Every structure is written in C-alpha cells, then in structure tokens.
Image (cartoon, rainbow, N blue to C red; front, side):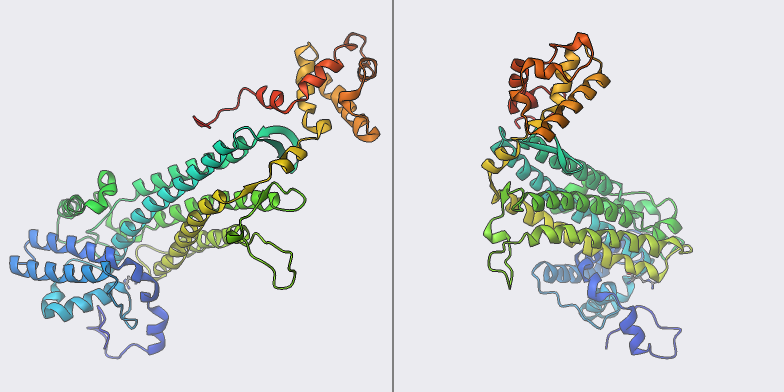
Length: 464
Ligand code: ARG
C-alpha cells in the first residue's frame, strides 16, 4: 500500500481516478537526488534546534545516505503508486527506520520542500546547460577559424546586400550564444535556495539555522562547488517564497530565447543546404532520407530544432498562464510547472549536444560560395556609393546615381566593370560629377577582399 503524507482528517480513501489524476511521481522523480539533499539539510536543522536527538539524527542520516547511494547507482526504484517523489522517499525511509522517519517532516511542508528541490535541480541544470552552450559556441568559432578567408554574400530580407566574411556570419551566432550563457548564469545566480517557509507561514525554527545548514551542506559536497558563491538567501517573506515560480518562468524565457537562436541557425543551414544555395553539405550521419524519393538527403535534425522552438515557447506560456490567476500562496496548479520545465531543459540539452557534432561534420562548398559572390551588380553597390561620397558627393545623390547605374546594368546586361568612363558619367546629370566615377577605380573596388576589408567597424572575437 502506498502511504500518503496526510490523511488523519479523512474518513474515506481517495478515489483511484483522483489518485491517478493528481500524482506527479511520473515526472517529479527527477527531483529524487535533490529531495534527499533537502532532507539531509533538514535533519541537521532539526538536530540543531532540538527536535532530533543525536542517535535519531545518525539513524536518519545513514538511511538517507543509503537512499542517495541507490539514486547515484541507478538502483533507486520509484513506486509509481506514490503521490509524488517526496512521498516516495518518505515511505522508503519509513521502511528503513520505522516510526523515526515520521519525525523527518517536523516543521516542514512539501510546499517548501518541492521548491527547495526544484531550485537546486534548476541551478544544476542551468550550470550544465551553460557549459553545453559554451561548447557549441566554441565549435562555431572553430568553423569560423577554419574558413577565415571565405567571403560570402550578406543578406537582408534574404536578398543580396553586401559582402561579408563567413566568419562574421557564423560569428553572429557565437555572439547570440554568449548572451545566452550570460542569461543562463544570471538566472542561476538569482535562484536562492530556501528552506524554512513551512507550508506558508514559517516554522518555529530560526531562518539562520536553515541558511547555515544549506551553506554547510554545499561546502561539504565538492560536486556542488559551482553553487558555492551564491546559494542561500534569508527567507524574507515565507508566503512569497512558497508561491514564487518566477525562477521557472525566467528559465523558460532564457531557454526560449536560446531555442530561438538555435532555430535561426538551423534555418540558415537549411537554406544553405538547398540545391539553390549549395553552400554546405550535411554529413550522412546527420541527415535523413525519403521513403519515396531515393535522391533525397533531408535536414531533419535542423527542422526539428526549428520545430521544437514551438514547444519551448508553449512551455513558457503554459507556466505564465498557469501562474497568472493564483491567489497566494501554494496552489496545486503549481505542480504543473514541472513537465514544461523538464521538457524545455531536455529539448535544449539535446540540441546543444547534437549541434557541435553536426557543424563539425558539415562540408563547406567553397566553389558555390565563390559563385554566389560573382554578383557585382548588387553586392558592390554600397561600396560604389561610398566611393562617390569620398569624392565629396552627398550620400543621397550618390545613392541615386548608383541606383540608376545598377538598374541600367541589370536591365541591359551590361557589366558595370566593363563600362567606359563616358558611359559612367551619364549616370550623373550634375556637370561637376563627370569623371567622379571611373573605370579603373571601379575595377579595383569590385574585389571581394577590398570590399569586406573596407568595413573597419567590424569587431571580432580575438583569433578569429
Ligand atoms: N507534488 C506537489 C507539487 O509538486 C507537492 C506539493 C504538495 N503540496 C500540497 N499542499 N498538496 O507541487
């Protein structure tokens, strides 16, 4: 029989459908490790405040350590019939130490417990997600370095705009990821581990005992070192503490933004892998075929990255909506923060694990990129404008002159590079401008490297 953590005032057993409907063990089992950590801290507090004797403390501590060992060795078997992971661990403890386990819940509510577990879990996940994010960033920077001389068309509105280095195009994704890492770290630092709120109104134990116990526990566990600088908080308002899910929403926002960046990256790669662009070829190990068309090599991985962005946004909106009408303090609705949170972490982590391998194995078709930049009539238009400006022509006038020149060239098929000086002079009706555009200069200017190097405001990561 699965025991509950409540029931004294009830005369009837819970309807089995209600049990099934309301339980969270199917997903909150992920908090098992953090729940045991919370209990280890809690018995320390109980001992210090006189609620547990020394022998009682040692017995509970040993039993909790045994459970922790099972969790670490993947031997922990959750009881699917338990209401949640907190209940399950409590029941396992009772099996080990009998009635003494009933003292564990002194001055503790699951409202506080679930929050502590979740915050601890999130801090750890955020830490590892930031590492993965940095790894992807480094892989992108590596590709930038390997292709440091490659020049490609830069686009606005997906139309040829100006020439850019491939390393700057890809480097912009490295910039996005840098901001993502910052957001993940800020979010992690803002999460303060809290205990002592009780159900909502606090407990008869001073908050400094909780805070000291949390600090001591983290200092004793080397694997949690990364959390050492910013892990505790004075519980200033216990009502707010138990009803706060801002950190979940902040995480889901940060993961949504990160997912949006990965989706844009995926979209660029999808476009570049098409026959029309042909800039890249996806490695066989990362592409999929068609069940009907034998020639197909599809970018399914990238499409799923793009597609999962919808799930990430949905997860964020689901928790925002779940929270918006809740009266203080804890309400059972809040249990539903976990499936979207876990889902977003899982999606992002999978994407961040696949992408470095994916881009490392991409084949860059330099010939196709070179062919794409043989578009003098559009890709150098802005350079031509700058050339006139340097000769004293106003920007507006220069823009107009080059606009007409480009249109003529596109309509007539006559290459700008091949036009004679008198032909060029026709594009300015102002007498003083005749001779300001000349063939020799244009030929010099219409060179990919000259073009990209003329943009000296570009700032790059060192060594790229
Ligand atoms: N499984 C619950 C949750 O995740 C635990 C808290 C239950 N608290 C309560 N007052 N019913 O939110």
